[in-house]
Length: 640
Image (tube, rainbow, N blue to C red; front, top):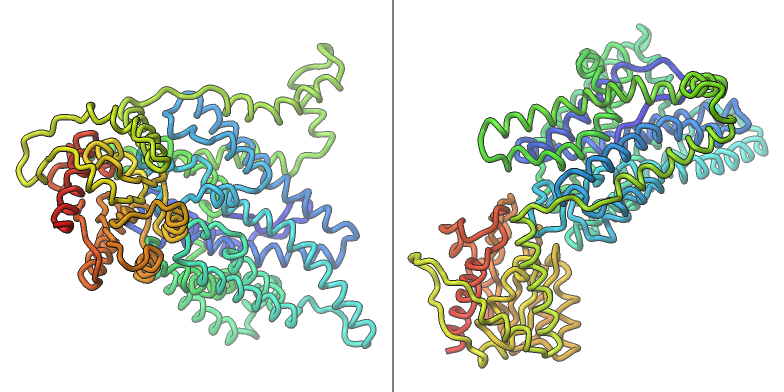
Protein backbone atom coordinates (compact mmCIF):
# COMPACT_ATOMS: atom_id res chain seq x y z
CA UNK A 1 0.00 0.00 0.00
CA UNK A 2 1.50 3.34 -0.97
CA UNK A 3 2.63 5.61 1.81
CA UNK A 4 4.01 9.09 2.03
CA UNK A 5 7.53 10.16 2.80
CA UNK A 6 6.74 12.68 5.51
CA UNK A 7 3.97 13.83 7.78
CA UNK A 8 2.14 17.03 8.25
CA UNK A 9 3.85 19.26 10.68
CA UNK A 10 7.08 17.34 10.29
CA UNK A 11 7.79 17.65 6.60
CA UNK A 12 11.06 17.17 4.83
CA UNK A 13 11.77 18.02 1.23
CA UNK A 14 10.27 15.33 -0.97
CA UNK A 15 12.61 13.01 -2.78
CA UNK A 16 11.51 12.74 -6.44
CA UNK A 17 13.39 9.46 -6.92
CA UNK A 18 11.34 7.81 -4.20
CA UNK A 19 8.15 9.26 -5.66
CA UNK A 20 9.14 7.73 -8.98
CA UNK A 21 9.67 4.36 -7.27
CA UNK A 22 6.19 4.65 -5.78
CA UNK A 23 4.83 5.38 -9.23
CA UNK A 24 6.53 2.28 -10.64
CA UNK A 25 5.23 0.11 -7.80
CA UNK A 26 1.62 1.26 -8.04
CA UNK A 27 1.73 0.83 -11.83
CA UNK A 28 2.82 -2.79 -11.36
CA UNK A 29 -0.06 -3.48 -8.99
CA UNK A 30 -2.74 -1.79 -11.11
CA UNK A 31 -1.64 -3.48 -14.32
CA UNK A 32 -1.56 -6.85 -12.57
CA UNK A 33 -5.07 -6.41 -11.23
CA UNK A 34 -6.47 -5.34 -14.61
CA UNK A 35 -4.38 -7.64 -16.83
CA UNK A 36 -3.02 -10.45 -14.60
CA UNK A 37 -1.83 -12.41 -17.62
CA UNK A 38 0.19 -9.46 -18.94
CA UNK A 39 2.21 -8.91 -15.76
CA UNK A 40 1.77 -12.05 -13.60
CA UNK A 41 4.21 -10.87 -10.94
CA UNK A 42 2.91 -7.31 -10.68
CA UNK A 43 1.54 -8.02 -7.21
CA UNK A 44 5.14 -7.57 -6.00
CA UNK A 45 4.54 -3.83 -6.22
CA UNK A 46 2.84 -4.12 -2.82
CA UNK A 47 6.01 -5.61 -1.36
CA UNK A 48 8.04 -2.73 -2.81
CA UNK A 49 5.66 -0.39 -0.97
CA UNK A 50 6.22 -2.35 2.23
CA UNK A 51 9.99 -1.90 1.96
CA UNK A 52 9.53 1.81 1.27
CA UNK A 53 7.17 2.23 4.21
CA UNK A 54 9.45 0.38 6.62
CA UNK A 55 12.41 2.52 5.57
CA UNK A 56 10.74 5.92 5.53
CA UNK A 57 8.58 5.49 8.61
CA UNK A 58 11.54 4.26 10.64
CA UNK A 59 13.62 7.23 9.52
CA UNK A 60 10.79 9.59 10.40
CA UNK A 61 10.44 8.02 13.85
CA UNK A 62 14.18 8.30 14.51
CA UNK A 63 14.07 12.03 13.73
CA UNK A 64 10.95 12.55 15.85
CA UNK A 65 12.33 10.64 18.82
CA UNK A 66 15.50 12.73 18.77
CA UNK A 67 13.74 16.12 19.11
CA UNK A 68 10.18 15.65 20.42
CA UNK A 69 8.87 14.71 23.86
CA UNK A 70 5.50 13.49 22.56
CA UNK A 71 6.74 11.92 19.35
CA UNK A 72 4.51 8.84 19.51
CA UNK A 73 1.29 10.81 19.86
CA UNK A 74 2.34 13.27 17.17
CA UNK A 75 3.25 10.43 14.82
CA UNK A 76 -0.06 8.61 15.22
CA UNK A 77 -2.06 11.81 14.80
CA UNK A 78 -0.18 12.68 11.62
CA UNK A 79 -0.68 9.16 10.24
CA UNK A 80 -4.40 9.40 10.94
CA UNK A 81 -4.63 12.78 9.19
CA UNK A 82 -2.69 11.41 6.26
CA UNK A 83 -4.55 8.15 5.72
CA UNK A 84 -8.07 8.34 7.11
CA UNK A 85 -9.73 11.23 5.20
CA UNK A 86 -9.17 9.69 1.78
CA UNK A 87 -10.00 6.22 3.11
CA UNK A 88 -13.28 7.52 4.57
CA UNK A 89 -14.08 9.12 1.21
CA UNK A 90 -13.48 5.80 -0.52
CA UNK A 91 -15.69 3.92 1.94
CA UNK A 92 -18.49 6.42 1.42
CA UNK A 93 -18.19 6.25 -2.38
CA UNK A 94 -18.11 2.43 -2.41
CA UNK A 95 -21.10 2.32 -0.07
CA UNK A 96 -23.13 4.58 -2.33
CA UNK A 97 -22.12 2.58 -5.41
CA UNK A 98 -23.14 -0.67 -3.70
CA UNK A 99 -26.71 0.60 -3.37
CA UNK A 100 -27.13 0.74 -7.14
CA UNK A 101 -24.56 -1.77 -8.47
CA UNK A 102 -24.83 -5.49 -9.10
CA UNK A 103 -25.07 -8.04 -6.29
CA UNK A 104 -21.41 -9.08 -6.35
CA UNK A 105 -20.12 -5.58 -5.71
CA UNK A 106 -22.02 -5.13 -2.45
CA UNK A 107 -21.52 -8.66 -1.18
CA UNK A 108 -20.27 -8.63 2.41
CA UNK A 109 -19.71 -4.88 2.38
CA UNK A 110 -20.88 -4.37 5.95
CA UNK A 111 -18.07 -6.53 7.33
CA UNK A 112 -15.54 -5.07 4.90
CA UNK A 113 -16.24 -1.47 5.95
CA UNK A 114 -16.12 -2.40 9.62
CA UNK A 115 -12.81 -4.21 9.12
CA UNK A 116 -11.36 -1.28 7.17
CA UNK A 117 -12.26 1.16 9.94
CA UNK A 118 -10.35 -0.91 12.52
CA UNK A 119 -7.43 -1.84 10.22
CA UNK A 120 -8.41 -5.50 10.13
CA UNK A 121 -9.19 -6.22 6.48
CA UNK A 122 -6.43 -8.81 6.18
CA UNK A 123 -7.76 -10.80 9.14
CA UNK A 124 -11.29 -10.68 7.73
CA UNK A 125 -10.04 -12.15 4.45
CA UNK A 126 -8.16 -14.86 6.32
CA UNK A 127 -11.27 -15.72 8.34
CA UNK A 128 -13.25 -16.09 5.09
CA UNK A 129 -10.54 -18.17 3.40
CA UNK A 130 -10.27 -15.62 0.59
CA UNK A 131 -7.86 -16.60 -2.20
CA UNK A 132 -5.94 -13.50 -3.35
CA UNK A 133 -4.84 -14.89 -6.70
CA UNK A 134 -8.20 -16.48 -7.52
CA UNK A 135 -10.29 -13.39 -6.90
CA UNK A 136 -9.63 -11.29 -9.99
CA UNK A 137 -12.26 -12.98 -12.18
CA UNK A 138 -14.94 -12.72 -9.49
CA UNK A 139 -16.71 -15.62 -11.16
CA UNK A 140 -20.26 -16.39 -10.17
CA UNK A 141 -20.50 -19.15 -7.65
CA UNK A 142 -17.11 -18.47 -6.20
CA UNK A 143 -16.78 -16.31 -3.14
CA UNK A 144 -17.16 -12.92 -4.87
CA UNK A 145 -14.16 -10.62 -5.04
CA UNK A 146 -14.59 -8.20 -2.12
CA UNK A 147 -14.85 -4.59 -3.23
CA UNK A 148 -12.41 -3.59 -0.47
CA UNK A 149 -10.09 -6.59 -0.70
CA UNK A 150 -7.10 -4.42 -1.58
CA UNK A 151 -7.22 -2.74 1.83
CA UNK A 152 -5.51 -5.81 3.29
CA UNK A 153 -2.12 -4.18 2.63
CA UNK A 154 -3.24 -0.93 4.24
CA UNK A 155 -4.30 -2.98 7.28
CA UNK A 156 -0.87 -4.63 7.49
CA UNK A 157 0.84 -1.24 7.33
CA UNK A 158 -1.47 0.33 9.90
CA UNK A 159 -0.83 -2.54 12.28
CA UNK A 160 2.87 -1.91 11.71
CA UNK A 161 2.31 1.79 12.49
CA UNK A 162 0.87 0.83 15.87
CA UNK A 163 3.34 -1.85 16.98
CA UNK A 164 6.63 -0.69 15.49
CA UNK A 165 6.79 2.87 16.94
CA UNK A 166 6.24 1.49 20.45
CA UNK A 167 8.83 -1.22 19.88
CA UNK A 168 11.40 1.17 18.42
CA UNK A 169 10.85 3.71 21.22
CA UNK A 170 11.49 0.98 23.81
CA UNK A 171 14.58 -0.33 22.04
CA UNK A 172 16.06 3.16 21.64
CA UNK A 173 15.53 3.95 25.32
CA UNK A 174 17.30 0.75 26.31
CA UNK A 175 20.13 1.44 23.87
CA UNK A 176 20.66 5.02 25.02
CA UNK A 177 20.57 3.99 28.66
CA UNK A 178 23.25 1.39 27.99
CA UNK A 179 25.37 3.96 26.13
CA UNK A 180 25.16 6.43 29.00
CA UNK A 181 26.08 3.74 31.48
CA UNK A 182 29.10 2.72 29.43
CA UNK A 183 30.08 6.28 28.52
CA UNK A 184 30.21 5.50 24.79
CA UNK A 185 29.79 8.00 21.97
CA UNK A 186 26.35 9.66 21.60
CA UNK A 187 23.67 8.56 19.20
CA UNK A 188 24.70 9.35 15.59
CA UNK A 189 21.45 8.20 13.99
CA UNK A 190 22.71 4.73 13.11
CA UNK A 191 21.86 1.59 15.06
CA UNK A 192 23.62 -1.39 13.44
CA UNK A 193 22.79 -3.83 16.23
CA UNK A 194 19.11 -3.03 16.02
CA UNK A 195 19.39 -3.33 12.24
CA UNK A 196 20.75 -6.87 12.63
CA UNK A 197 17.88 -7.69 14.98
CA UNK A 198 15.35 -6.36 12.48
CA UNK A 199 17.05 -8.23 9.66
CA UNK A 200 16.69 -11.49 11.58
CA UNK A 201 13.03 -10.70 12.23
CA UNK A 202 12.52 -10.11 8.51
CA UNK A 203 14.13 -13.47 7.74
CA UNK A 204 11.82 -15.06 10.28
CA UNK A 205 8.78 -13.56 8.57
CA UNK A 206 9.90 -14.74 5.13
CA UNK A 207 10.62 -18.21 6.56
CA UNK A 208 7.18 -18.39 8.15
CA UNK A 209 5.62 -17.43 4.82
CA UNK A 210 7.54 -20.22 3.06
CA UNK A 211 6.57 -22.73 5.76
CA UNK A 212 2.87 -21.89 5.38
CA UNK A 213 2.88 -21.97 1.58
CA UNK A 214 0.70 -24.71 0.20
CA UNK A 215 -1.37 -24.91 3.38
CA UNK A 216 -3.82 -22.17 2.40
CA UNK A 217 -3.62 -19.15 0.16
CA UNK A 218 -5.29 -16.91 2.75
CA UNK A 219 -1.98 -16.88 4.65
CA UNK A 220 -0.80 -14.45 1.99
CA UNK A 221 -2.68 -11.77 3.97
CA UNK A 222 -1.18 -12.70 7.34
CA UNK A 223 0.62 -9.84 9.08
CA UNK A 224 3.22 -12.19 10.53
CA UNK A 225 4.06 -13.77 7.18
CA UNK A 226 3.93 -10.56 5.15
CA UNK A 227 5.90 -8.20 7.39
CA UNK A 228 9.29 -9.16 5.98
CA UNK A 229 9.45 -6.19 3.61
CA UNK A 230 8.46 -3.72 6.33
CA UNK A 231 11.08 -5.13 8.69
CA UNK A 232 13.76 -5.20 5.98
CA UNK A 233 13.09 -1.55 5.17
CA UNK A 234 13.22 -0.65 8.86
CA UNK A 235 16.55 -2.46 9.22
CA UNK A 236 17.97 -0.47 6.29
CA UNK A 237 16.84 2.80 7.87
CA UNK A 238 18.55 1.90 11.15
CA UNK A 239 21.79 1.18 9.30
CA UNK A 240 21.75 3.83 6.55
CA UNK A 241 19.32 6.73 7.18
CA UNK A 242 17.89 8.74 4.31
CA UNK A 243 19.90 11.90 5.01
CA UNK A 244 23.15 9.94 4.69
CA UNK A 245 21.99 8.42 1.42
CA UNK A 246 21.18 11.80 -0.10
CA UNK A 247 24.60 13.12 0.99
CA UNK A 248 26.26 10.45 -1.15
CA UNK A 249 25.58 12.57 -4.21
CA UNK A 250 28.51 14.89 -3.39
CA UNK A 251 31.74 14.70 -5.38
CA UNK A 252 33.81 13.33 -2.51
CA UNK A 253 31.64 10.22 -2.43
CA UNK A 254 31.47 9.66 -6.18
CA UNK A 255 32.74 6.10 -5.85
CA UNK A 256 30.10 5.21 -3.27
CA UNK A 257 27.45 6.75 -5.50
CA UNK A 258 28.70 4.70 -8.45
CA UNK A 259 28.59 1.45 -6.47
CA UNK A 260 25.14 2.22 -5.10
CA UNK A 261 23.90 3.07 -8.58
CA UNK A 262 25.10 -0.28 -9.96
CA UNK A 263 23.49 -2.17 -7.10
CA UNK A 264 20.28 -0.25 -7.69
CA UNK A 265 20.28 -1.13 -11.39
CA UNK A 266 20.77 -4.78 -10.52
CA UNK A 267 17.91 -4.69 -8.03
CA UNK A 268 15.67 -2.95 -10.57
CA UNK A 269 16.43 -5.65 -13.14
CA UNK A 270 15.54 -8.34 -10.59
CA UNK A 271 12.23 -6.63 -9.83
CA UNK A 272 11.35 -6.35 -13.52
CA UNK A 273 12.21 -10.00 -14.21
CA UNK A 274 10.19 -11.17 -11.21
CA UNK A 275 7.24 -9.00 -12.24
CA UNK A 276 7.23 -10.56 -15.69
CA UNK A 277 8.02 -14.17 -14.77
CA UNK A 278 6.80 -14.87 -11.23
CA UNK A 279 3.39 -16.55 -11.22
CA UNK A 280 1.10 -16.12 -8.25
CA UNK A 281 -0.79 -19.30 -9.14
CA UNK A 282 2.12 -21.34 -7.76
CA UNK A 283 3.80 -21.32 -4.35
CA UNK A 284 6.92 -19.63 -5.78
CA UNK A 285 6.03 -16.16 -4.40
CA UNK A 286 5.76 -17.44 -0.83
CA UNK A 287 8.76 -19.73 -1.18
CA UNK A 288 11.31 -17.05 -1.92
CA UNK A 289 9.82 -14.83 -4.62
CA UNK A 290 8.48 -12.16 -2.27
CA UNK A 291 11.63 -12.32 -0.13
CA UNK A 292 13.84 -11.86 -3.20
CA UNK A 293 11.74 -8.93 -4.45
CA UNK A 294 11.89 -7.25 -1.04
CA UNK A 295 15.66 -7.63 -0.84
CA UNK A 296 16.03 -6.38 -4.42
CA UNK A 297 13.91 -3.34 -3.57
CA UNK A 298 16.40 -2.21 -0.91
CA UNK A 299 19.24 -1.17 -3.26
CA UNK A 300 16.67 0.26 -5.68
CA UNK A 301 15.27 2.41 -2.88
CA UNK A 302 18.70 3.63 -1.79
CA UNK A 303 19.80 4.34 -5.36
CA UNK A 304 16.55 6.18 -6.11
CA UNK A 305 17.08 8.39 -3.05
CA UNK A 306 20.69 9.20 -3.99
CA UNK A 307 20.96 12.07 -6.53
CA UNK A 308 23.20 11.30 -9.45
CA UNK A 309 22.61 7.57 -9.81
CA UNK A 310 21.19 6.14 -13.02
CA UNK A 311 18.24 4.73 -11.08
CA UNK A 312 17.43 8.17 -9.65
CA UNK A 313 17.61 9.71 -13.12
CA UNK A 314 15.21 7.13 -14.52
CA UNK A 315 12.74 7.31 -11.65
CA UNK A 316 12.60 11.10 -11.65
CA UNK A 317 10.81 10.91 -15.01
CA UNK A 318 7.93 13.34 -14.57
CA UNK A 319 5.00 10.93 -15.22
CA UNK A 320 6.47 8.45 -12.72
CA UNK A 321 6.88 11.18 -10.09
CA UNK A 322 3.36 12.48 -10.75
CA UNK A 323 1.93 8.98 -10.33
CA UNK A 324 4.02 8.36 -7.22
CA UNK A 325 2.79 11.54 -5.55
CA UNK A 326 -0.75 10.19 -5.93
CA UNK A 327 0.06 6.54 -5.37
CA UNK A 328 -1.98 6.20 -2.17
CA UNK A 329 -5.12 7.51 -3.86
CA UNK A 330 -4.54 5.49 -7.04
CA UNK A 331 -4.19 2.34 -4.97
CA UNK A 332 -7.33 3.09 -2.97
CA UNK A 333 -9.55 3.79 -5.97
CA UNK A 334 -8.37 1.29 -8.58
CA UNK A 335 -9.62 -2.00 -7.13
CA UNK A 336 -13.25 -1.02 -6.42
CA UNK A 337 -13.45 0.28 -10.00
CA UNK A 338 -12.22 -3.07 -11.32
CA UNK A 339 -14.78 -4.97 -9.25
CA UNK A 340 -17.54 -2.56 -10.27
CA UNK A 341 -16.80 -2.43 -14.01
CA UNK A 342 -15.49 -5.96 -14.45
CA UNK A 343 -12.24 -7.29 -15.86
CA UNK A 344 -11.48 -6.42 -19.50
CA UNK A 345 -10.85 -10.13 -20.08
CA UNK A 346 -14.52 -10.83 -19.33
CA UNK A 347 -15.86 -8.33 -21.87
CA UNK A 348 -18.06 -9.61 -24.66
CA UNK A 349 -16.21 -7.77 -27.44
CA UNK A 350 -12.90 -6.05 -28.10
CA UNK A 351 -14.32 -2.52 -27.93
CA UNK A 352 -15.84 -3.08 -24.51
CA UNK A 353 -12.62 -4.66 -23.26
CA UNK A 354 -10.57 -1.69 -24.48
CA UNK A 355 -12.98 0.82 -22.92
CA UNK A 356 -12.88 -0.99 -19.60
CA UNK A 357 -9.11 -1.17 -19.63
CA UNK A 358 -8.63 2.52 -20.42
CA UNK A 359 -11.20 3.53 -17.79
CA UNK A 360 -9.68 1.35 -15.08
CA UNK A 361 -6.20 2.60 -15.85
CA UNK A 362 -7.00 6.32 -16.08
CA UNK A 363 -9.96 6.98 -13.77
CA UNK A 364 -8.08 6.06 -10.55
CA UNK A 365 -5.46 8.70 -11.40
CA UNK A 366 -8.16 11.33 -11.90
CA UNK A 367 -9.92 10.42 -8.65
CA UNK A 368 -6.61 10.33 -6.78
CA UNK A 369 -5.69 13.79 -8.07
CA UNK A 370 -9.03 15.21 -6.99
CA UNK A 371 -8.96 13.61 -3.57
CA UNK A 372 -5.35 14.68 -3.05
CA UNK A 373 -6.19 18.29 -3.77
CA UNK A 374 -9.54 18.64 -2.05
CA UNK A 375 -9.35 16.06 0.76
CA UNK A 376 -5.85 14.92 1.67
CA UNK A 377 -3.99 18.23 1.44
CA UNK A 378 -6.55 20.24 3.43
CA UNK A 379 -6.78 17.50 6.07
CA UNK A 380 -3.00 17.44 6.57
CA UNK A 381 -2.50 21.18 6.80
CA UNK A 382 -5.72 22.42 8.40
CA UNK A 383 -5.53 24.00 11.84
CA UNK A 384 -8.37 24.34 14.31
CA UNK A 385 -8.95 27.90 13.17
CA UNK A 386 -9.18 26.74 9.55
CA UNK A 387 -11.82 24.17 10.47
CA UNK A 388 -13.92 26.75 12.34
CA UNK A 389 -13.64 29.23 9.47
CA UNK A 390 -14.61 26.64 6.87
CA UNK A 391 -17.58 25.55 8.89
CA UNK A 392 -18.72 29.14 9.32
CA UNK A 393 -18.56 29.74 5.58
CA UNK A 394 -20.49 26.52 4.97
CA UNK A 395 -23.44 26.93 7.34
CA UNK A 396 -23.29 30.59 8.36
CA UNK A 397 -23.56 32.03 11.84
CA UNK A 398 -27.27 32.32 12.51
CA UNK A 399 -28.93 28.97 11.85
CA UNK A 400 -27.99 26.81 14.84
CA UNK A 401 -25.61 27.00 17.79
CA UNK A 402 -22.15 25.72 16.94
CA UNK A 403 -22.24 22.66 19.26
CA UNK A 404 -25.21 21.33 17.33
CA UNK A 405 -23.41 21.88 14.02
CA UNK A 406 -20.29 20.08 15.20
CA UNK A 407 -22.33 17.16 16.54
CA UNK A 408 -24.21 16.89 13.24
CA UNK A 409 -20.99 16.94 11.25
CA UNK A 410 -19.40 14.23 13.40
CA UNK A 411 -22.51 12.07 13.14
CA UNK A 412 -22.52 12.40 9.35
CA UNK A 413 -18.85 11.49 9.09
CA UNK A 414 -19.15 8.44 11.32
CA UNK A 415 -22.58 7.09 10.36
CA UNK A 416 -23.02 7.92 6.69
CA UNK A 417 -20.79 5.14 5.35
CA UNK A 418 -22.55 2.61 7.55
CA UNK A 419 -26.06 3.84 6.72
CA UNK A 420 -25.67 4.43 2.99
CA UNK A 421 -23.30 1.73 1.83
CA UNK A 422 -24.65 -1.03 3.99
CA UNK A 423 -28.31 -0.39 3.27
CA UNK A 424 -30.39 -2.03 0.61
CA UNK A 425 -29.45 -5.07 -1.39
CA UNK A 426 -28.78 -4.39 -5.08
CA UNK A 427 -30.79 -5.90 -7.86
CA UNK A 428 -29.96 -9.44 -8.92
CA UNK A 429 -28.53 -10.50 -12.26
CA UNK A 430 -30.73 -13.32 -13.69
CA UNK A 431 -27.91 -15.77 -14.50
CA UNK A 432 -26.22 -15.07 -11.19
CA UNK A 433 -29.48 -15.66 -9.31
CA UNK A 434 -30.12 -18.93 -11.15
CA UNK A 435 -26.65 -20.25 -10.41
CA UNK A 436 -26.89 -19.21 -6.77
CA UNK A 437 -30.24 -20.98 -6.53
CA UNK A 438 -28.71 -24.10 -8.08
CA UNK A 439 -25.81 -24.02 -5.61
CA UNK A 440 -28.19 -23.39 -2.70
CA UNK A 441 -30.26 -26.41 -3.71
CA UNK A 442 -27.06 -28.42 -3.94
CA UNK A 443 -26.09 -27.33 -0.43
CA UNK A 444 -29.44 -28.59 0.90
CA UNK A 445 -28.97 -31.92 -0.86
CA UNK A 446 -25.41 -32.23 0.45
CA UNK A 447 -26.58 -31.54 4.00
CA UNK A 448 -29.34 -34.14 3.66
CA UNK A 449 -26.91 -36.74 2.29
CA UNK A 450 -24.65 -36.54 5.34
CA UNK A 451 -27.61 -37.03 7.71
CA UNK A 452 -29.04 -39.99 5.81
CA UNK A 453 -32.16 -38.12 4.70
CA UNK A 454 -32.77 -39.18 1.12
CA UNK A 455 -36.20 -37.58 0.86
CA UNK A 456 -34.99 -34.33 -0.62
CA UNK A 457 -32.89 -36.09 -3.22
CA UNK A 458 -35.77 -38.37 -4.19
CA UNK A 459 -38.08 -35.42 -4.76
CA UNK A 460 -35.55 -33.53 -6.82
CA UNK A 461 -34.84 -36.58 -8.94
CA UNK A 462 -38.00 -35.92 -10.98
CA UNK A 463 -36.65 -32.50 -12.05
CA UNK A 464 -33.74 -33.89 -14.10
CA UNK A 465 -33.35 -31.86 -17.32
CA UNK A 466 -33.40 -33.37 -20.77
CA UNK A 467 -29.90 -33.53 -22.24
CA UNK A 468 -29.28 -32.15 -25.74
CA UNK A 469 -28.34 -34.59 -28.47
CA UNK A 470 -24.59 -34.09 -28.56
CA UNK A 471 -21.90 -36.59 -29.56
CA UNK A 472 -19.30 -37.99 -27.15
CA UNK A 473 -21.36 -37.37 -24.04
CA UNK A 474 -21.23 -40.08 -21.34
CA UNK A 475 -24.12 -42.53 -21.45
CA UNK A 476 -27.13 -41.61 -19.39
CA UNK A 477 -28.66 -44.30 -17.25
CA UNK A 478 -31.27 -44.99 -14.59
CA UNK A 479 -30.65 -44.29 -10.91
CA UNK A 480 -28.12 -46.70 -9.38
CA UNK A 481 -28.66 -46.78 -5.61
CA UNK A 482 -26.35 -49.77 -5.16
CA UNK A 483 -23.43 -47.82 -6.58
CA UNK A 484 -24.48 -44.57 -4.91
CA UNK A 485 -24.38 -46.17 -1.47
CA UNK A 486 -20.66 -46.83 -1.98
CA UNK A 487 -19.67 -43.27 -2.94
CA UNK A 488 -18.52 -40.29 -0.85
CA UNK A 489 -17.78 -37.06 -2.74
CA UNK A 490 -15.94 -34.05 -1.33
CA UNK A 491 -15.63 -30.86 -3.36
CA UNK A 492 -16.29 -27.17 -3.91
CA UNK A 493 -19.03 -25.11 -5.57
CA UNK A 494 -18.79 -27.10 -8.82
CA UNK A 495 -19.78 -30.22 -6.91
CA UNK A 496 -22.57 -28.29 -5.20
CA UNK A 497 -23.90 -27.17 -8.60
CA UNK A 498 -23.97 -30.86 -9.62
CA UNK A 499 -25.37 -32.22 -6.36
CA UNK A 500 -28.98 -32.46 -7.55
CA UNK A 501 -28.01 -34.46 -10.62
CA UNK A 502 -25.68 -36.67 -8.57
CA UNK A 503 -28.37 -37.41 -6.00
CA UNK A 504 -30.72 -38.46 -8.83
CA UNK A 505 -28.18 -40.58 -10.70
CA UNK A 506 -26.47 -42.09 -7.63
CA UNK A 507 -29.08 -42.18 -4.82
CA UNK A 508 -27.47 -42.63 -1.43
CA UNK A 509 -24.29 -40.77 -2.32
CA UNK A 510 -22.69 -38.72 0.48
CA UNK A 511 -21.81 -35.21 -0.70
CA UNK A 512 -19.61 -32.87 1.37
CA UNK A 513 -18.96 -29.63 -0.50
CA UNK A 514 -18.52 -25.95 0.24
CA UNK A 515 -18.18 -22.80 -1.87
CA UNK A 516 -14.53 -21.70 -2.31
CA UNK A 517 -13.19 -24.85 -0.62
CA UNK A 518 -9.54 -25.54 -1.39
CA UNK A 519 -7.80 -28.85 -1.66
CA UNK A 520 -5.61 -28.25 1.39
CA UNK A 521 -8.79 -28.46 3.48
CA UNK A 522 -9.56 -31.97 2.22
CA UNK A 523 -7.43 -34.09 4.63
CA UNK A 524 -9.05 -32.68 7.76
CA UNK A 525 -12.53 -32.96 6.23
CA UNK A 526 -11.90 -36.56 5.20
CA UNK A 527 -10.86 -37.39 8.75
CA UNK A 528 -14.14 -35.92 10.04
CA UNK A 529 -16.13 -37.98 7.54
CA UNK A 530 -14.24 -41.11 8.58
CA UNK A 531 -14.98 -40.44 12.25
CA UNK A 532 -18.68 -40.10 11.39
CA UNK A 533 -18.68 -43.34 9.38
CA UNK A 534 -19.42 -41.55 6.11
CA UNK A 535 -16.31 -42.54 4.17
CA UNK A 536 -17.40 -45.09 1.55
CA UNK A 537 -15.47 -47.41 -0.75
CA UNK A 538 -15.18 -44.79 -3.52
CA UNK A 539 -13.92 -41.41 -2.30
CA UNK A 540 -14.40 -38.72 -4.95
CA UNK A 541 -12.20 -35.62 -4.56
CA UNK A 542 -13.49 -32.85 -6.82
CA UNK A 543 -11.17 -30.03 -5.77
CA UNK A 544 -8.58 -27.80 -7.42
CA UNK A 545 -10.89 -25.18 -8.94
CA UNK A 546 -9.71 -22.56 -6.44
CA UNK A 547 -5.95 -22.93 -6.62
CA UNK A 548 -2.87 -24.98 -7.36
CA UNK A 549 -1.35 -27.53 -4.96
CA UNK A 550 1.65 -29.81 -4.53
CA UNK A 551 1.83 -33.57 -5.15
CA UNK A 552 2.36 -34.08 -1.42
CA UNK A 553 -1.22 -32.94 -0.85
CA UNK A 554 -2.57 -35.85 -2.89
CA UNK A 555 -0.35 -38.23 -0.90
CA UNK A 556 -1.83 -36.88 2.32
CA UNK A 557 -5.37 -37.28 0.97
CA UNK A 558 -4.61 -40.87 0.00
CA UNK A 559 -3.27 -41.59 3.49
CA UNK A 560 -6.38 -40.12 5.11
CA UNK A 561 -8.83 -42.30 3.14
CA UNK A 562 -6.78 -45.36 4.12
CA UNK A 563 -6.21 -48.72 2.42
CA UNK A 564 -9.03 -50.65 0.83
CA UNK A 565 -10.72 -47.59 -0.65
CA UNK A 566 -10.50 -46.13 -4.16
CA UNK A 567 -9.47 -42.51 -4.57
CA UNK A 568 -11.39 -40.88 -7.44
CA UNK A 569 -9.86 -37.63 -8.76
CA UNK A 570 -11.96 -35.29 -10.93
CA UNK A 571 -10.17 -32.89 -13.29
CA UNK A 572 -11.15 -29.23 -13.17
CA UNK A 573 -12.46 -26.90 -15.85
CA UNK A 574 -12.25 -23.13 -15.31
CA UNK A 575 -10.72 -20.16 -17.18
CA UNK A 576 -7.74 -19.73 -14.84
CA UNK A 577 -4.03 -20.19 -15.42
CA UNK A 578 -3.73 -23.04 -12.91
CA UNK A 579 -6.17 -25.32 -14.78
CA UNK A 580 -3.37 -27.01 -16.73
CA UNK A 581 -0.98 -27.63 -13.79
CA UNK A 582 -3.80 -28.86 -11.55
CA UNK A 583 -5.07 -31.29 -14.16
CA UNK A 584 -1.53 -32.38 -14.94
CA UNK A 585 -0.90 -33.29 -11.30
CA UNK A 586 -4.22 -35.11 -11.02
CA UNK A 587 -3.61 -37.10 -14.21
CA UNK A 588 -0.05 -38.02 -13.29
CA UNK A 589 -1.03 -39.09 -9.78
CA UNK A 590 -3.85 -41.31 -11.01
CA UNK A 591 -1.54 -42.94 -13.56
CA UNK A 592 1.21 -43.70 -11.06
CA UNK A 593 -0.75 -44.82 -7.97
CA UNK A 594 -2.83 -47.94 -7.41
CA UNK A 595 -6.44 -47.71 -6.28
CA UNK A 596 -6.75 -44.30 -7.94
CA UNK A 597 -9.25 -43.45 -10.67
CA UNK A 598 -9.32 -40.34 -12.87
CA UNK A 599 -12.61 -38.80 -14.04
CA UNK A 600 -11.79 -36.34 -16.81
CA UNK A 601 -14.47 -33.68 -16.43
CA UNK A 602 -12.35 -31.12 -18.27
CA UNK A 603 -12.03 -33.20 -21.44
CA UNK A 604 -15.73 -34.08 -21.39
CA UNK A 605 -17.15 -30.59 -20.93
CA UNK A 606 -14.62 -28.55 -22.95
CA UNK A 607 -16.35 -29.13 -26.35
CA UNK A 608 -19.69 -27.96 -24.91
CA UNK A 609 -19.32 -24.52 -23.27
CA UNK A 610 -23.08 -23.95 -23.64
CA UNK A 611 -23.59 -26.47 -20.82
CA UNK A 612 -21.80 -24.10 -18.44
CA UNK A 613 -22.89 -20.85 -16.84
CA UNK A 614 -21.27 -17.60 -18.09
CA UNK A 615 -18.41 -18.03 -15.61
CA UNK A 616 -17.26 -20.98 -17.80
CA UNK A 617 -16.76 -23.02 -14.63
CA UNK A 618 -20.05 -24.11 -13.07
CA UNK A 619 -22.37 -26.49 -14.97
CA UNK A 620 -25.91 -25.52 -15.81
CA UNK A 621 -28.53 -28.14 -14.89
CA UNK A 622 -27.89 -29.89 -18.21
CA UNK A 623 -24.15 -29.76 -17.61
CA UNK A 624 -24.67 -31.07 -14.08
CA UNK A 625 -26.45 -34.08 -15.55
CA UNK A 626 -23.43 -34.70 -17.77
CA UNK A 627 -21.23 -34.44 -14.69
CA UNK A 628 -23.33 -37.03 -12.86
CA UNK A 629 -23.49 -39.41 -15.86
CA UNK A 630 -19.72 -39.15 -16.36
CA UNK A 631 -18.98 -39.97 -12.73
CA UNK A 632 -21.49 -42.82 -12.67
CA UNK A 633 -20.14 -44.31 -15.90
CA UNK A 634 -16.51 -44.25 -14.77
CA UNK A 635 -17.37 -45.69 -11.36
CA UNK A 636 -19.47 -48.43 -12.95
CA UNK A 637 -16.57 -49.49 -15.17
CA UNK A 638 -14.23 -49.53 -12.20
CA UNK A 639 -16.77 -51.44 -10.10
CA UNK A 640 -17.23 -54.12 -12.76
